[in-house]
Amino acid sequence: MTISMVFRANSINHTPSFPNPTKTHFLSPQNLLHFYKKTPLKNHIGEFSCSSPGPVVVGLAADSGCGKTTFMKRLTSVFGGAPKADHNHQNPDSNTLITDTTTVICLDDYHLLDRKERKEKGVTALHPRANNFDLMFEQIEALKHGFPIEKPIYNHATGLLDPPELIHPPKILVLEGLHPLYDSRVRDLLDFSIYLDISNEVKFSWKIQRDMAERGHSLESVRASIKARKSDFDAYIEPQKQYASVVMEVLPTQLIPDDTERKVLRVRLIMKESGVKNFQPIYIFDEGSTISWVPCGRKLTCSYPGIKFFCGPEAYFENEVTVLEMDGEFDKLEELVYVEGHLCNVSTKFYGEVTQQMLKNCDFEGSNNGTGFFQTLIALKIRDLYEQVAMSNGVGDGVGVGSLASTK
Ligand SMILES: Nc1ncnc2c1ncn2[C@@H]1O[C@H](COP(=O)(O)OP(=O)(O)OP(=O)(O)O)[C@@H](O)[C@H]1O
Ligand SMILES: O=C(CO)[C@H](O)[C@H](O)COP(=O)(O)O
Image 1 (spheres, rainbow, N blue to C red):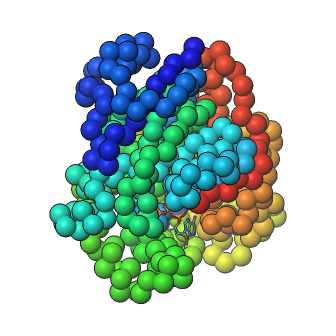
Image 2: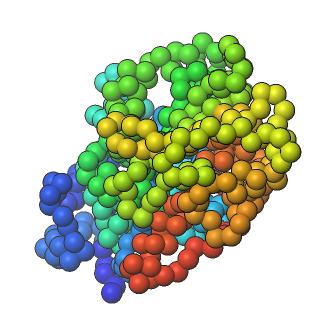
Image 3: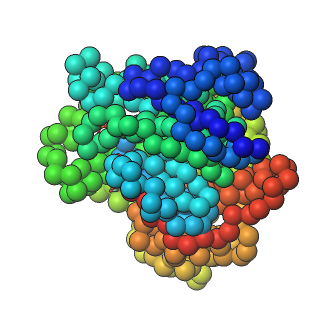
């Protein structure tokens, strides 16, 4: 089917080009077509194929500086395919990452107010008023139904909204940013979602590391920026974690008493037991049991302070979840295969695939601890989910174990 339409951002203060659908107003591709036949586009830009079925849509929510970029690198590495170099030619400040299989949209592009306007109105980028959720919903829904969109670009260099870029529906669409789970209409479009829950202590240490070393900020300005965002973070970002399919909590270690370095991390992967189609939680040894495991010994080298795993059922926002926890660091990544061998429900295609991925990406942040390990496990779960959806749609093309991809 070839359809000539693009769901576009009409202006910087986008006038929604679509009737404002409610949660119950489901729009099939036919309905969308019907609407567009009746409502000619102001700026028609060509003929595009409606790729049917549309993408699997994944949301990745977190505050700024909480490791979304690193996570995306691991995810695109699992899906394979190098980033398309030509995409950013039109605007080198585009935030979108496109590989053969995956498109990662940064939701900062749906900022409604630019930097100057936010300052004038005294709102942060985290506040819903600063973001255009109507446009976000319309465009993600259009992509989900296989239609291309013209998405705005928030330029982080200038703080302005740039002219829109054309985005075609991919196989896997990832929405990363502050608010993928905030608006219930957008939330309902997600097949899988992740919330990166970085504790204040760790967030502060990561932000200092990046903003001071790489962006030339002072310690005081990093502190002030975290403080200024805190109340909006608490009100609008953090509550999203209750909706996520999985939450990755990153906490200070419990293995070193009074640790202030924040280098050794305790990472908890909180996985919903039910309600997430095509996803089953990972566990150790025996499903439903509570297991504490110190694997250090003959098969796993552990220097101080060692490694401790935990796995078991818990309640999280009234949901039954399985929690997989790792505290400590790996000494030798190749020995990770020993731990991998004791995990169940890991969506690998062959024995040792997690370890292979970790070794391939050993230079990424968090490769020696639970952040990198669990990011890899989730990436494989998303690949599996995609393949199950593709199979049930009769498309059945696996996404292979791909080459190393890099992001922003
Ligand atoms: N797993 C990790 N282990 C240790 N440090 C990490 C990890 N992930 C991220 N960091 C630190 O946090 C910083 C921010 O990470 P990253 O750029 O991935 O975050 P982000 O959420 O994409 O940020 P932004 O939204 O501001 O672009 C990194 O530069 C690094 O210093
Ligand atoms: O929280 C953020 C998401 O990355 C940014 O602060 C927000 O997008 C505003 O960006 P900038 O500081 O470049 O104006």
